[in-house]
Amino acid sequence: MSDKKTSINDARRSKTFEKNPIKGTKFTIAVSSAKGGVGKSTFATNLALALKNLNLKIGLLDADIYGPSLPKLFSINHKPESKEGFLIPIIKYEIQCMSMGFLTDKETPMIWRGPMVTSAIKTFTQKVKWEELDFIIVDMPPGTGDTQLTFAQEIKVDGAIIVSTPQELALQDVKRGIAMFDKLNINIIGLVDNMSYFSGDDGKKYKIFGDGGVERTSKEFKKNFLGEIPINPDVGKFGDLGKPIVESMPDHEISKIYSKFAAQIKLIYF
Ligand code: ADP
Image (cartoon, rainbow, N blue to C red; front, side):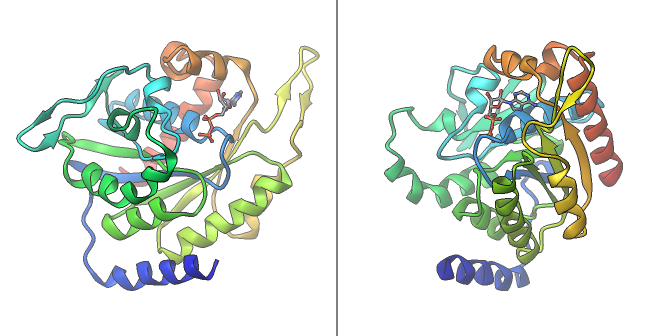
């Protein structure tokens, strides 16, 4: 814990150095979660697609070194090409994609991945030929670890979105996530409550994981609450098929929620 604190202080001190945006991009948005399994990657991919649908040029960087999901969620099974020392993003659904999963073998043991974090982030931010992006959406690993810190030290992060489910246990970690971004001086765009309820056939909303916890946490820490996404089996179904719901069914009620998130974010930056 104290190590983490020291590192965060180091990162704050390093703020005195000018930080650059990722080359070829206007704005970098980090999608973060305090815990694994709350739907962060699902959110990052669908948000990227919803922003693309607003005629913005979007890149998606899956920086989750320990559990990259983009290859599966976008059904990409090949490695990126390189040209003149730069990696060329793989374009899928009109989005420029790069993932740790394209660069490591599934068999690479976790213990070897830790030391790779810094060099991997440098590669992603300096050695990928991103082309004229309005936004790059970065799918961060869960928690408050090395990747977040390295990112904040290496590049200008314009905003962070924290995704959570409404359980008390998840909310405890959300508070830690808020503290981390505040200390790193990264603007928190807002919090999202994912899997917040299930709509039954009887038309009732069932709050399976608790009620309004993410919104309460947002208020408590004076952060924006961006909104709720209900539990819907179609989300998982289309993710598993490698074509997320916003791309597969743009008129689905879930896709419309993503359109609203995208519109909010576009409005902040453009
Ligand atoms: P994380 O990136 O936080 O580890 P994922 O995006 O991999 O989480 O999501 C975990 C699982 O939850 C996946 O199977 C995904 O399809 C599912 N999921 C995410 N959001 C929803 C939702 N709103 N409704 C139903 N399932 C969801």
